[in-house]
Image (tube, rainbow, N blue to C red; front, side, top):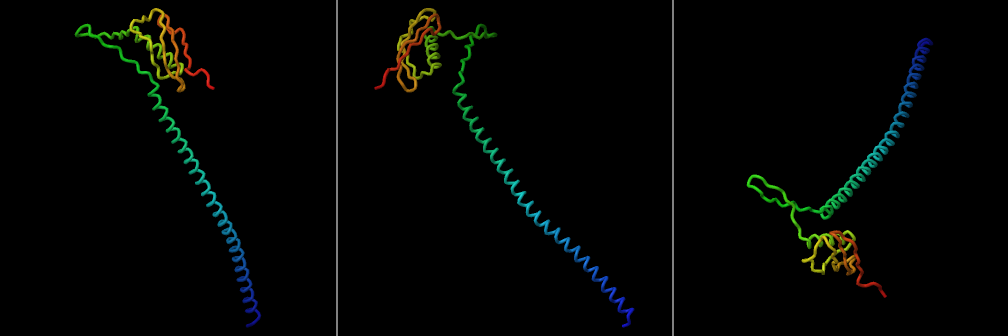
Length: 181
């Protein structure tokens, strides 16, 4: 081997070394990027799991709240049926065979007085209302005094209700036990 061949061989070896070194440096740089991607991938995975848990928790919380609201609505609508006053339909009286005229029912004075007394006492919070006065001969357009027994808060109450001209004028009720020892 002469010097020229040796110098060409050495130059080729040097160029090969430089190329391998550059490739190795690029490969090393690429590996660092890949290791960073792995760390980012792990972070993203944790982030995705956290977001999924948050969304599921929020959805579950909203569903639970909706369920409770629906239960409250169901309870409220079942109580509304008890609170609605049902007005009776007017009686239909046939005048002719071809036409019918609606005529309101004529209540007796006793029934009207009883309804007024019961309505007023129910508005005041009394229950189990018992009318002790005989109302058969009572007139709604005069003065009427009605003796009553009822309960308020599970406490027996007695007294009177005064009516004048078809309206409640005075309610005087007292509990049976005025004073406790």
